[in-house]
Length: 193
Image 1: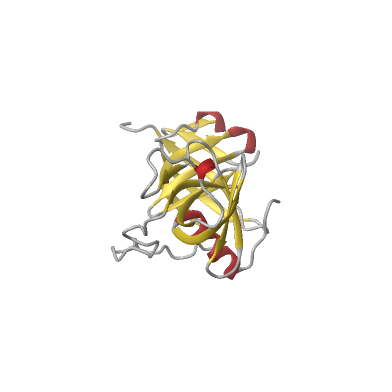
Image 2: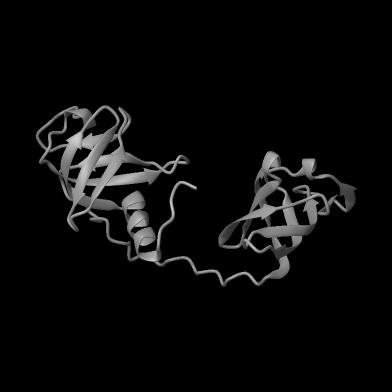
């Protein structure tokens, strides 16, 4: 496991990884930009030549030309490696200033019960992990399966290998001790069928 965080740290990381934050550049090297944030903490962003840099008085600025002591607003993005990539750095406060938008937030989904039925569309199939992802209403879910999971495709018995992106999916599930959603029965329908 790469990281474990309590709720306060997790919320802090979410802000770092998705919103503009203000800080002072501590150092820049070939791979990272280290920022000292207003709360006194330090955070290292993974920097690449694709990181956008907008400085008022510098045309064509790059992340590797930023000097220590520069005050910046930076926006990151979480990578699959759990590194936070530096998407953008600017010395001008962004219009939204990293504050949550006042736009209406989508409704929050109720917690899933320990057993039940779900309906949605297949987003991806990770056959090596015996898992597929579905979009069920406002939430995306990881669904695991095992050798006892029964599959049907358009009403006919099938194997897990028929799972494809875009299929309509109705499944019965239970949660295991780790909280994973385990499918016991999966009914797949080909779009338009």
